[in-house]
Image 1 (cartoon, rainbow, N blue to C red):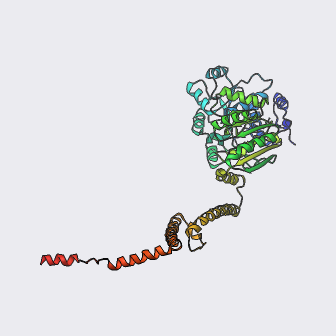
Image 2 (image 1 turned 135 degrees about the vertical axis):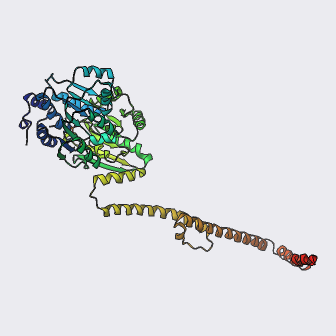
Image 3 (image 1 turned 30 degrees about the vertical axis):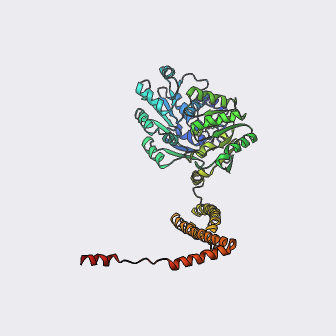
Length: 480
Ligand code: AMP
């Protein structure tokens, strides 16, 4: 097994790595550190929780120690991730006061950041929006950046930061080293890598579309209205920290409130909260001050809280790829994690999309089979429906014929046949009515019926016949 001392790092850096508890490099570190130390660009895809932050931070610090004029910029999609990266870098810089740091993220006081920037930080970690703010204010100059990291690039694009990143990169010297990490490498990212990177080395750790083997993943299909009950059941069963993912920001607040009412201490985390609140929630969660955090997909990527033991997908993610990232919040650094996903009827399409990502090689025939089983389900449903309808139509149908299969071929036919059924119904009602009439007359008072009928016969016999006048011939007569 490779050791950190084989990379030729400075002794102080080696010490701080050990101090962080990193005894040997992880796979992504083993591959990235030597390449980055050689000064080459990297296009890396690594599963979350693999030690990616160390993979770029260790060579970054080593480089800055060698080149005292150089500065580094690390871009992350979310504020939480930026803080996390800053923490790792701070740990790795233990005992070195020469390198100042600045974290430039939205939602924090700009005056505080301006103060930090006056101290000429050599490592800047931040989110695209706030970095551009500082560029516009001229409080941040990036002309000394020799080391650039784009972390979770696919997420940055998903969050609509593409043009912001572009603007930032226009302010960074072309002569630089760039490490670009992305959980997935869709065509868009490969295209971007051609724009931002120079002859990059490809690094790929594990499959980006695979849920880590150390995560026990359970899927439960359930009616939407029963989800909350099931959640309470699951929470009762589970020990340790839990991260629940819901679809909306508002949903996180509502869910946390409900859970607190049900005596499960929990806090929401979403992008609408003030940054200070977001920080407080994160710190309290890290310090195990409460057990359950209810979050939107803001917490899906990169968030590293090693003690998260369970991830519960109460709602499926908006982006199918986020499913894998969500699950990656547990089972950090090879710990055992567990995940459970609720799927309601309306989410089946989304789930199929996720399954396609998880099993891209899932044969088309399997998918077809799946579809046919769905069809079967539909058939069962429609059979049930038609049973109900046929019961109804039996009432319409005097002939007692039970074959209603033609009734439900399509809506129009349905209507047509239904109206015929109704016609039948009408005629049958008429018949029944006349039968009824006849029966009463017959059974109730035979004589009266006879009497009336002879009377009627008599009346018709002696009723004076109407003379038929041919109007046409009359007209012609008068013309003459
Ligand atoms: P990351 O993928 O960078 O978010 O890291 C995931 C987790 O792995 C973090 O909790 C790190 O502290 C931990 N980690 C990173 N590198 C190592 C290493 N070499 N040895 C042990 N743990 C590590």
